[in-house]
Length: 466
Ligand code: UDP
Image (cartoon, rainbow, N blue to C red):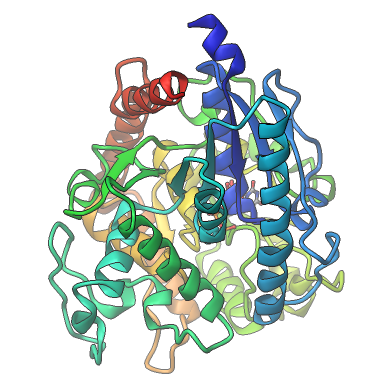
């Protein structure tokens, strides 16, 4: 077995976004621990933002040019041209690296790729290398897309806002719970995302026994993992830093983007706060927050009067969105605004009382695995669905509601924060549930836990493949 292990090498390709890189890196580390060497690849745009690459034997990094040489400065609205450049440059690179490794007599045993990277699976298929799709969002979201782009398309057409949809294996859903690509036209500016999901589903459906690895775990999404008849979904998560789970690896700060620009003293400041008193606010690594939403959050915080730690990322042109807040001075007396933080460490801090989050899947898993109650303010992609699960299925948080005009107002933020933070029955209930999911997440990744068993079975299959 040792010899086989020494020869066994996989290529792991991720979409160039922090929310994809983080779970993929954790997954890569687990593969390495189980005896598989990993070449980790994403485009230069993402690599250039990485503060420090982790130095782990058996894990190597191979960036590829996305045609912008890491200098894509556009907004999400201009992403279409970036994405098509990523696909064309990336396809060439993947073909070349896979073929040259085969010629050298040390072929990749498997190519693993993440959400929005269907083209990698297509390249691998074209040159006859087995591939595995790693879905880095909840199984429920995969189910919804699958239903939407195959047999249940009609359920998604002309849905009114207050309609409730029943889909096999899923909780009852309203349109606001659907991932946003369900409503996105393939010819619109975000059409690249929808097309990639449709390509992915077609690719899986053309396989004999299609299987997807999912960043979730059995207890969390038992039915959703088993909802699709034609697709096997295998939970191997939560794929988050081990500090949240078994704590075996030292805290891994190195992969956090933009750490160089974070204010390091926020941890000292948290140390001075009383237990469970601080609201942590962060909206992930790339979503663009309108100045109106920023102002409403700010005013909501002022109305609450509680201490907070708020991550407001620098904008592309180097401008600081918090400068536009009309209540900036009051806020500075009340809490702390930082450009980036080590979310892993913050969520574990005893002073933290709740997490106001956009419900990116990593943030949701990280919060859940920390036993931290959530105020959910989803923006797009899978976040609306994640917020639904947080509030109604796992019951670990409260979701903000938008007004008729589509604005989440300051009083709504105040109300939801108070529900989650104020001592009483509701907070107790949220905390008890949060603690339950935290324990189950730990369970899943233990030696005989469901995710670990699934992962080992997958690794053995690779080790024993020809
Ligand atoms: N993150 C962080 N520090 C911050 C904000 C975010 O370390 O100040 C990390 C967070 O821990 C998570 C990732 O960035 O792992 C964001 O992923 P998520 O899926 O939540 O959101 P996305 O960035 O994809 O919208």
